[in-house]
Length: 116
Image 1 (tube, one colour):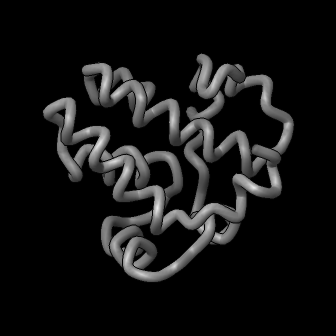
Image 2: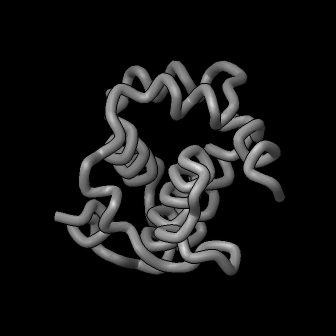
Image 3: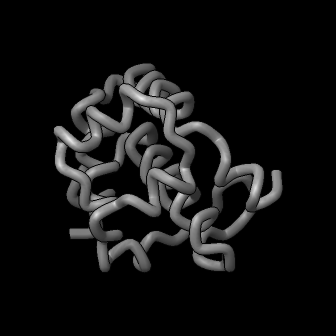
């Protein structure tokens, strides 16, 4: 999928999939929300508003208050691509989020996921 195609995916379509993935592994929606808020700087209320309307990833990240400065510490492979090597900024942020949700589903502690 090209960077342009991935940025046009609806966040509101993918968000429930993140939650389902976490819940299948006995994690919670609250943990998913904590991860998203940590990465983007959204408050819980702002995130809830964004999950209630059709918004694509491009807009979701463009409107994010502040990408966490420790996001550059997110390393690893998502969909066969190293997230730290992705050049397109929006695609990289989306893959950062994918990686964090993967780590949650694999049972990592929230401290490690949030790079604390």
